[in-house]
Image (cartoon, rainbow, N blue to C red; front, side, top):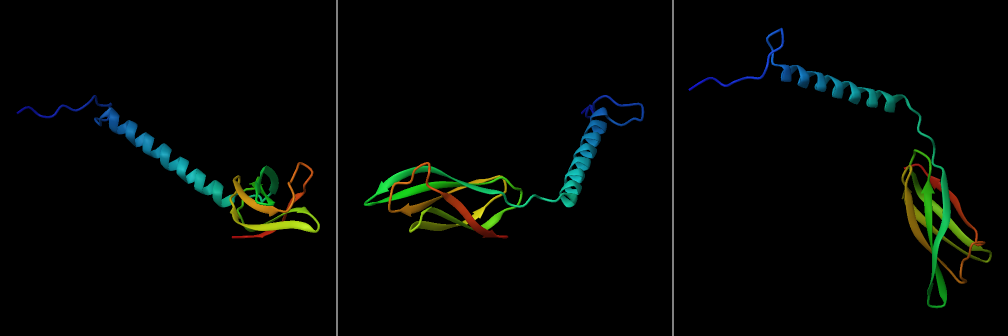
Length: 128
């Protein structure tokens, strides 16, 4: 039985494919190290939360306002307090978390149909 044939060899006697795979491994290792170091020395921006009305739908004699909370910051916000409506008809709800650069939805129940002029606001949050 004839010996296994190996690929072309470089001047050092090692197969060229072995050199390519070694170089690829080095590049991947250096890239991973660069990402870890960048993450260790960067300062994430705090939560930057906004809220907007997505849709309103009737529910019996009340209205459900579906709102979207957007976090434009890097850090996650937990226990996000959202409020909507005008006094004395103000509704509030708590969103468990709003991930960095993410969007979450929640619903508020209001006695009157919310419109474009209905105020919705973030009342506060905590760090997870």
